[in-house]
Length: 144
Image (cartoon, rainbow, N blue to C red):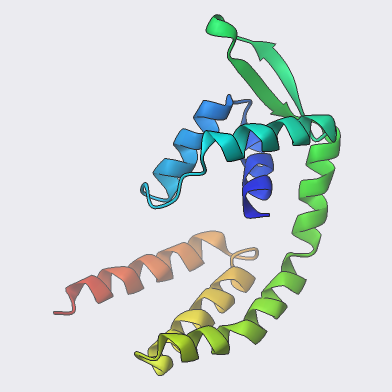
């Protein structure tokens, strides 16, 4: 699931403890979603048993610092290869989500299209895409 993917992604950047991963998720979701310790720690144990993560060291107070293994890195690479397939499937479902929202389907469709185009173009010109999106955001904030 998404939590497994996020754990692998998070550990790709640097080794962390389970607590640090929970804290990071809390910050990124602005506290709206934080998995319980009863969910996270068994999942970390499972990922360790599958050879996707390993304990790099045990810190003070027996805090386990985890890192991604080569197998874990390979899984992330495979997932990135299938990113375009996932986006294609998401495009098929987006109209269902827009219909469910029922508020402003035209605006919702435009927002999805902007996101889709930005994701495609970002690989070729990251800074230009960032600049355009920031300008768009700035203009939207000016609307009363």
